[in-house]
Length: 48
Image (cartoon, rainbow, N blue to C red; front, side, top):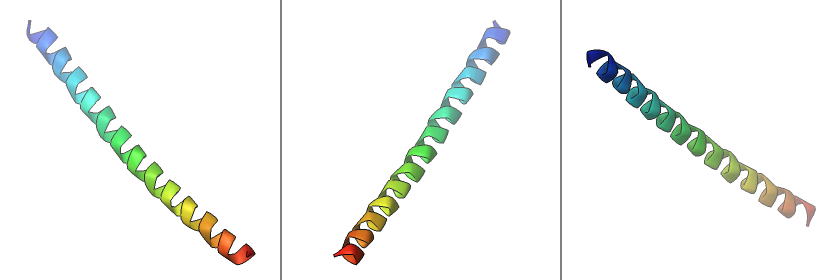
């Protein structure tokens, strides 16, 4: 029973780590998208 609890705990920690990593990736992706939109707007202004 202790072995099963240990494995469940490891799986829970792994899932929490994946969730944390996915949050970081989505934050970075959002920032990159924001910067990309800013660059596109700047190019539009320059090309007018």
